[in-house]
Every structure is written in C-alpha cells, then in structure tokens.
Amino acid sequence: MSALLDHTVLSVVTGSRAYGLATDASDTDRRGVFAAPAALFWRLDKPPTHLDGPLPEQFSWEIERFVTLALAANPTVLECLWSPLREVVTPVGEELLALRTAFLSERARDTFLHYARTQLRRAENHARTHGGEIRWKHVMHLLRLLESGAHLVRHGEPLVEVGALREPLLAVRRGEVPWPDVTAWRDRLTTQITTGPSALPATPDRTRAENFLTDVRRRSLAA
Image 1 (cartoon, rainbow, N blue to C red):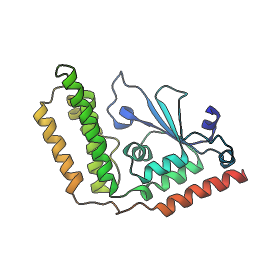
Image 2: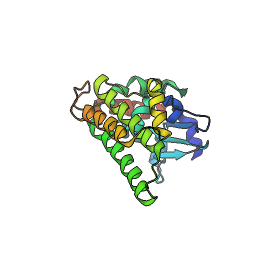
Image 3: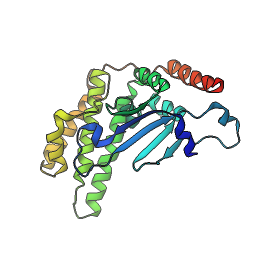
Image 4: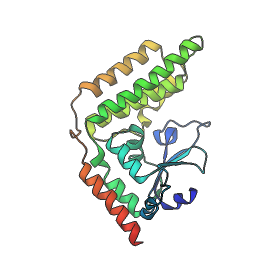
C-alpha cells in the first residue's frame, strides 16, 4: 500500500515548524493527501483511508477522507490547507488548495473549541495523576489552537504561522506564565470563537467539494 504515496497530490509540513514555534529539539511533522486510482475501489479490498510513514512523523489521508474531514471543519485538516510549508503540490493539489475556502463553515467554531477542550482535559488529567505536574507544551498548543480558531472566525482562514506570538507561547511552554494568566488567555479566545462576529459561511460548499472529488476519480480512470 505504500505505493499509494506515489499518488500524493499534496504534502505539507505542519506542527511547530509550520507554526513558527520550533526549537532545536522539534520534529518535522508532515501531512499529505494521496488520490488512490479509482479502479482500486472496484476490488474487495479497498484502498486505506490513511497511511503512516514512511518518514517519521508523516501521515497521509486518501483524498476522499481528507475532503470529508475538511467539510466537517477538522482543525488539523484545515490547517494543512493553509500551511505555509508545502513540499509537494501537483496540479490536483493546486485544485485542492484553490478549493479550500469551500470547506469553511460556522461548524469550525465547535470543532476548534472541541479540540481545545480535549487537550485541556488531557492536561488536567495528567496533572491530577502526576502530582500536579503540568504538561506546558500541551497547554501552549491549546492556546495556539484557540488563536487559530479565533482568527478563522474573524478573518475566514486559520492562523497557522504564529510568529508574532512566538515569545508569549514559548513562555507558556517553559512554564513561566502563571496558570490564572493562561486561563484568562484561554477564556478570552473561547469567547471570541463562541460569540464573536464571523466571516464564515453558515455551511460548507459540499457541491463544489463533491464535484472536485468526482472529477479527480474520473480523470484517474482516463490516465
């Protein structure tokens, strides 16, 4: 199945390197999209919806799965579409990037907040079971995610590169920011995402997304 990565249409760097938060110890996280040839779906064993590797910290989605997640306003998938660090962009990948605003909707308010709450619960559970130890790296990324979501609601695109916030966020990672200040930062962003004025459409453009996917499948048969 690794041969399916020969059909990669988009590959980007995400994580700390894309966010502008990398340190000397940071990994290079890669996320990609591959378009499995349509004829493979005629078999009993269907192509996988995702693949790990072959590089460390590399993960790729089959294009249908990626489109489905994007329509659902999955924060990780949306940030892939706005990553400033692109390593592979084929003509189909260009089409996918040109389509990225079609995936946006008011649903992003809920998904970004849900992801942030999940990270917060994990941080709190770790603290309860490890003598109050706080995983400050996770807290930093919680705040970064909320900053991205608030920017998405206000401006209609997620904030991936957060260089302007690098020092305050890295101070959180180092555990230098008091917890009350962290929670105040979190609460302010949560309010912006929940009730702030929105540049997002009510629903995604499912028709455009489906037409794109159908066309990709049709062209793969003719290749």
